Structures are given as C-alpha cells and as structure tokens.
Image (cartoon, rainbow, N blue to C red):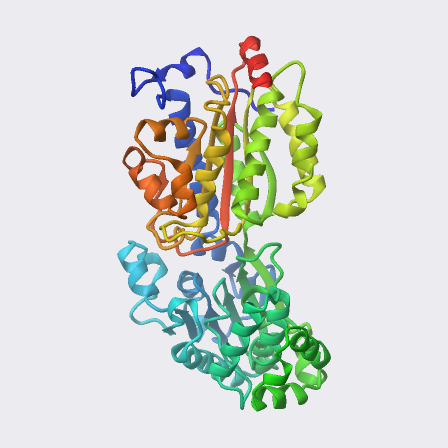
Length: 535
C-alpha cells in the first residue's frame, strides 16, 4: 500500500483571502501538479510514435507486425483513415523505410495545418513521402472529398496480389473518412437514412448494421477488396470496450450482412416505406455468403488493438505509483450522463473520507454507490473492488483512475465540453454543504480528453477540488448558473485566471477521456480522520 506523501508541512495554507476561503494549501497545489503528470503519462502512452514502435519493427530480414513475422521484399502497402492516422502513418514510414511501396491515408480536413501549428512536426509526413494524404470530412461528416479518398484506398487495395502485405491504420473518426456507398446508393441517400435512424433513437449497433450493409468498404469490405493479399490492421480505439467491428465500422473485420436484420431495423423505426429505390435494391441483393465474406474472416487478415483507453490507464497507473500513490482502475468504460458520473465520483470521495474513521463507511453509502453501476456503465465487481481498496488505504495516498466517454445533455448555449462540465459538476459534489472535506484529506479531480480537444475549446479538460466552489463564490461566480447554460469553459476561464484548465494542445491521438481522483490523507491525526468520517 502506498504511504501518504504529506506530513504536517503539507497542510500549510497559502491563503488568498483573510477568511481563508478559497485559500489553496501546498498539498492541494501539489495534487494539481501530480494530476497533470499522471494525465500526461496517459496521453504519452498512446501517442502514435509510441504505439507504432511497440507493434511494428524490422529485425534483420523480417518485418514484425503485432508479433507476426513477414518477409518484406518491397511489397508493403499502407492505407489509413481516422483522426490519428497521420501520426501513425508517419511513424510507420520511418520504420518501414524502402520496404513501403506506396500508401493513401484519409484524414480530417485541416489536420496537417493544425498539427503544424501545434508543433507536432513528427506527426507529419516528409515532403518525399510515398504516402498520399487526402483531407476530407469537414465537421466530422462524410463528404465528397472523403468519398474520393475512400475510392483511392479501394483502388490501392483492389490491385494487390498474394505477394503483398497491406498495412491498415485505423483510428476514431475513420467511418466518416471512409464513405463508399454500394452503387447505386448515393452518399446523400446514405447520409439521409443514417440521420433519420439516429433521430428516431436507433442504437449505435443498429446504425452500424445498416452502414456496413450499404457500404463497399465497411464490415470487412476493405479486406475483401485486398484479397488475396495479407492484411494487418493496427487499430487505435476510441470506442468503449474496444470492439474492432465498431471502430470505423470494422472495414477489416468479418461481418455477414443479414438482410432480415436490416429490414427489421427499418421496420422498427418506421422507415421501410420511405426508402429510396437504390437502398431497396442493395438490401434485396444481399446474399451473405461467398468467397469475399470468407476472406474477411480467414487467416489472411489480422486485427490488432494497439492503443486504447485501457493502455492509457495502465501508463497513468504506473506514473501514479512512481509519485507515491496506490493506483486503482475503476473502469475504462465509464459512460452515461455527466450528472450521474459526477455523482458517482462524489460518493466515492465521501466513501474514502468515511473510511478514514474508526466507524468506517455507512452501509447506505455503499449501497448507493453499487446501485449506480448500470447508470454509469461500471460492473458491480469493479465497484466492489474499488470500495475494498478505498477502505484499506487509510491515511495513505490513492489515485482512482477511469476512462470512457460520458455524455452531456445540452440545455444552454454556453461554451464547454464534457470534461470541463464533468470537472465542474464533481467540484459541486465535493463542495456540497460548504466544505464537506476538511483539509486533512486532500482531494483533486481531473478530467481530460486524450485528443487535447474538449468540445469547441482550446482546453483538454479541467481540474477540480473541494475548495473550488468556495473560491468561485469569493470571485462572484456561481457554478450552478454556468452549468445550467453548459458554459463550463467560460467558468474555468474566469476562475482565478483559468489556472484550472488543462491545455495540452492537439495531441494527435484519441482514446476517449481519462478521469482521475487523487486522494491523499495524513499518516497522523486520527481525530481529524474521525471528523472526516462524520462529515
């Protein structure tokens, strides 16, 4: 078990007001710094260069790709699509050298200039690169530019032979960057159908079922085009639980199109009667069998998740341990509304505070936490394990880690993102009743997007603690008003000069969000611990 990091000196207050309200202790500021370091370690672990070098290497006359060995003879081709594949492609080209024949990558509009301005030159291709970069999908929506890129990728894959190796790089956002509707369906018709399904409340699984059935490349279509070449996909996941078939709609993952299931989905949402004739024709012609389908599931195709939220949390755990904390991962799959997620974190901190007392946590508090599992996507076993660690880590330093992608219900017209709103809501939870967590228990919460972009802002997220609400009130800021208007960015910008915002700049990667709670008690002071337990 990790020991506490602060002794008596750690609780010295750096008061900014005569009353001490909003004053920041050296302990709290240290937690902020350590939180930023832990978050930085999480992001660093999933940067394209680091991920690629862990899975792609030349050893003598052999090319190792995710543990598989190939004999490169100038026969390696590369395609990619997604928000993070430019950096992945640059790293791959450095590793492959002359073994790379050519490549095509489909990336978001403006990404090259954005990376250049962010000082991420290592994620850009050389002027003499053998890889063609095509930008498209403005506003993360399929468009004609993305469709042309998809056509170029399909053309490259279709020309390969059994002597070739196709390296496929995939990351989040890849679906919008690889639009290839099955003729005679037009891009506009497919987009219209997708929008109608989403508006009617179709699930992501239902949407993907239709997308794959109506696409030439999704649902294993790219692998079918590349037959009989070897295909190896290196995938950076931005989807909870990392299902390869959902990331960019699984272009190299076998998917047997079921016409009956497609028709049932359309019937369920009342769209069958209004379908364009082109969609009817394609669905009616689905057979679900054949050599192409078998190829997508054969030994010629290998899919590997090389970067994920789980990997980021592992790196964060290692850094937290180096800093003297006992790390515990709650879940890499936290989801649901930010109100519920913030409530969970608030209850977990309260549980940790009560665990410091001789009486221990209240039974009703334990049941309230366990009851939230389904609402936030955390299995019962994970919650019970976390509560056990919180009880055992009395007086020590603990780092609770989780990841995922909560959602925000938009009610106002303010500026912010889910990470900043989550941090502000957690601060409100921690500050319920004025100051529910006395100084002996230092608590800081950080929520940040691994892509460095939280909503339409220049911040990745924000840091919160139990003193934030008091500090805001001293400065004439009411958190509730900003939350009602979904205006968390404005709140954090105005609060103390914006020093709680996390600004990393564009990172060039994306494995969803990272949440961390740093809790640091004191080795001595049982009286204070008892007071905590009664708060």
